[in-house]
Image 1 (cartoon, chains in turn cyan, red):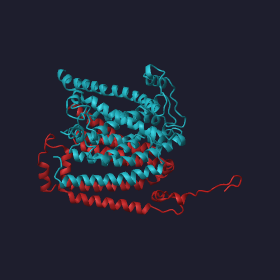
Image 2: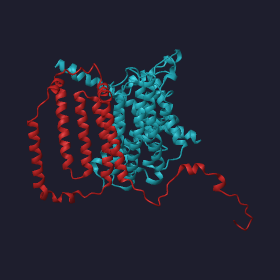
Image 3: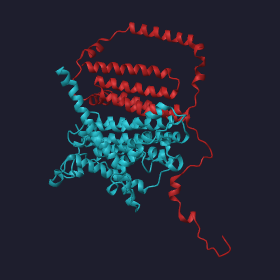
Image 4: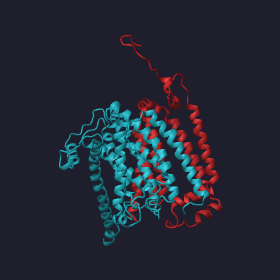
Length: 341
Length: 204
């Protein structure tokens, strides 16, 4: 019995505790990301934003959550009930399980697996299922159109995301995400991070994650002017809330991946005194928050793309360019004998 | 150890059950979803074997790309599967006969199976422990170093197949208006607009 306790029970309890330590702050972060978005947009548009519930509107996300929680879940008569309710769960769960391999600081990671980069790529490529199942199961025109658009869009931009990840992994020489961050450590501090030598890929990656998370200016799956609310049209109450949470958690996740690949993860911008006092987790958080600010900035600034322009950008601009860059990077590394061991 | 054995039986059972549901589900969309479930559980079986790279690739390629396109197409097709199934009993004897012939052939092949001495040697070698090399690295060694030319040849064949498929299905429709971005960029203000002096009450 003691053996059973040591081998199975205790590690299980520890892992569950670690999972809670990741998921609970994440959900709080998602809630406050919605407030962050509304406040930043408000400032950009010379408004005040939410300021009624709590001081500076700080309790607004909780009020929104409570409101959604007490609403009735409506399932349309023609809908496929099981799949209809499964779709938001799929979106939500997929946005949470990817966090298992994200290193917040040196050694501060739930599962330090060797194929972390591939795992993230696999999980992000599954994100399309929640949307496509939702669109089909709703048995309604607008959601279905939104789902089809979204499926085509996400598959297209995944290709260039894959190539960008390959370039970074070529330079880092490992698929392990902690290894990728440590490969950016050096005397030059900030200038050692991969966004300097691979700057074009950083830009491509950022635009691709905008498309991958269905954010502006690529939010065609839920273009409200044409499709009501796209695949979310028939959803209400907690089912809608799960979609919402999943989408925002995905935004944070994608910013996190971008931070790890290009912005040096938990590393401080320079290895000197005032910067090194701040713990790595905080640096990670600051970088993610900056990227999220750009997400919102883009939303407040740019008009929506037309669908053919979106496809053209993905297949005719990003794909050839990133493919060429992979070949160039690999050639450069081999020619100058800089391939990491 | 017992947990991993239990996990194996769980994943294997779900794989087989969902594979069966793929061919027996009434709704084609459900079939594709069961197929995805089967892929997932196969990936889990790879993880149990310690082949994490293969597991991830299985999820990325089959679940993330192939099955998405599959689902995409199946959702848009309007097939009445009840109609397709009507001839089932009629064709059962022929189908069964073909199945039995294939089974007999398989049994004949497998019973006459013998390993060449080289293959036995390879099989007898001890597998390197996991801590020595990651399996990503080992697969890389085999595919990109040892069998680099064969790998390139396979890639070329796939490229040709892809171009062939595009050529066969691509058709040019006349009279479709397309955006030519270069034309728009090169357009000058003089070609596009004219400044007129409009007298009051006369119009252009």
